[in-house]
Structure formats: structure tokens, C-alpha cells
Amino acid sequence: MVQIFPNRCDQCGKVYTKKIQEEFASGVGFITCTGRSCRAVREFPSSPIAVLLQPGIEETHGNTGLVIVASDRDSNRWILPSGCICVNESAEETLGRIAKETLGITLNPQNLHDFCTKSNPKEQEHLSFYINTTRVHLSQLLTRMFLNTPKKIRIIQTTEGIFFESPLHSYAAEKFLLEIWGRRPLF
Image 1 (cartoon, one colour):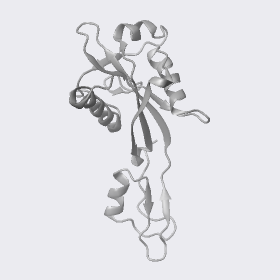
Image 2: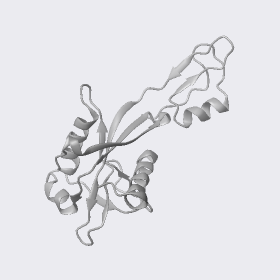
Image 3: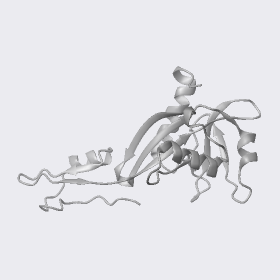
Image 4: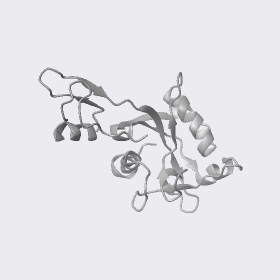
């Protein structure tokens, strides 16, 4: 899935400048050639992914935090529950499916609110983050998990010491936690 950055324009062969490469890396998602007669645009498509920001409550202290799950690839890396949006499926439907598969919970679409959208063209990531405003207790998550595919689940109050698989996940988690304790409550 990693996108290798091209050095030259496909149309005229002009070498891309460092400025164009930096714009691409910052999340623009396309490159416009600066050749005098060319001006060709090259897009880098990405498959949209819906990401769930699920608040959870720890049983021991009753602290509210963010539910994260262990990455399938590396149990030391963490991800937010997420999945690719299928053809003819809305982001809300995707999140309902992912919440059931990953956390064992049923979402009410009316409790889902758009949080932010972020892109990383180099990794071909286009992520839409949604908050489920219904908090769940850790014990609910663990008892509803499918017995044949247990996942490592954690509720965090800070992103310090957490290694997210994607920097976009880390960004959204930090922003979410700031919203909980920084300015105004979400719930």
C-alpha cells in the first residue's frame, strides 16, 4: 500500500522540484507539473477508511478515555477501530460493521458524529474519523468480544507511550483526548 513518490512527470519527463514533493508529502494528494507547456496533474488515489473514536470507561477508577485495539501486525502497536468503506456502504454503516467485528458492540447511527478528516497521500490513506457519543464500559467490550478472535483492548487517557500504527491515528487520538479534558465535554 505504500506509494512510491515519482521523480518525474509522466507526460513531459520534467523532474519534480523539492517544493512539489513537500506539498505532496503534506497531504495535497496530487502533483501539478511545473513544465512550461505541460501542467499535467497526477493524482494519487486512496481508498477511504472510516475510523471510530469510541469513548470507554475503565471499571477500576471510572475514568473516561479512548478505546484502542492492538494492531493485527504488531501487538506493540495500536490502532483505532477502523475499516475500508465498501462500495454502496456509508461511513456509518462501515463503522457499525467494524464496531461489531472488532469491539462486539452495536452502534446507533444517531450517536455517530463527524470528528475530522485527514489524508496521507504517501501511504494512500484518507481517513474519516467519527465519534460514538455513547460511552461503553471495558467489561462490556470484553464480554461481547467473539471468543474465537480475542483482541487486545485498552482504554487510554493519554497518547504518551502509545505507538500508533499510523500518525493519523495518533493525531486524531490526541485531538479527541484534548476535546474530552481540554475545552468542553463531548457527552
